[in-house]
Length: 298
Image 1 (cartoon, one colour):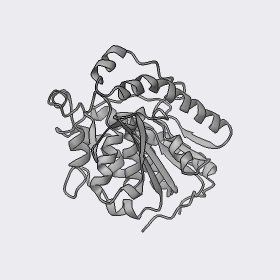
Image 2 (cartoon, one colour):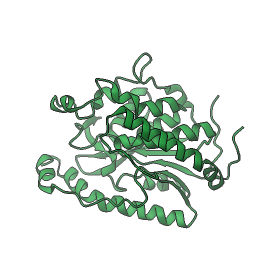
Image 3 (cartoon, one colour):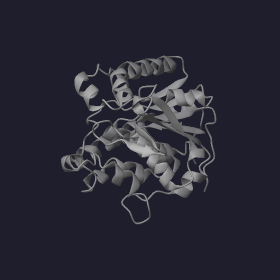
Image 4 (spheres, helix red, strand yellow):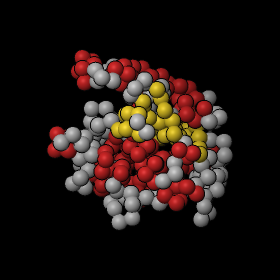
């Protein structure tokens, strides 16, 4: 059955955070279980995967993508990094797992049928532009997955990816610092349901190893510039979100505890993080409904 939008005035936003999305993929699971259907969904980096899985209505895939899938021998690791495939083997993860019979089959027909608009953000290396893609850019499952990959391509840990002759890396380097509040506003929304991947008291520290990044990205100086500017941009967006929360214009799902890092690959730790996220989501779902003005799901 095709979903019907029941929260027409609120944008859903998923922050990135690499494998920390093991915790927040539980929000996808609970939103789907609760039957909450948003008209607009935006995600950056790992939040792009949560966006894609939410739009496909696939809670089990949302969970597996950041838990059991990490045990796949082709998922990545130091060997993959040394071979130039990245610490996370992005080519495999995003382009060779979603077809029927592969590791994470994706319901592309349900994605197409979902009524919500979508925004995925990536960073264009040539000039430092923040690039957003919507459903009009997606004709095939490959079109979707390569853009999720671009949004999720963490600099240094993963090789940049080329789409239509342009080179991209992680959308977290863009104007908002990694939380797509700007994309939701550009789409006309003034109320937001935002899924964050760091605890409430977190403040991103200034980048270390400035010389390393300048040298590593000497052929892509816009990437180095953006990496060094990101902490200030990220912290400013979070402060804006907290102000919106105080004004009653945003609901923030903020992890009570974040027990894993963005590079965590231990499946037991990832499963534990997901379970913690699910427990928190289920405690908060009545508050979600109150903020969204949506009654209990039949």
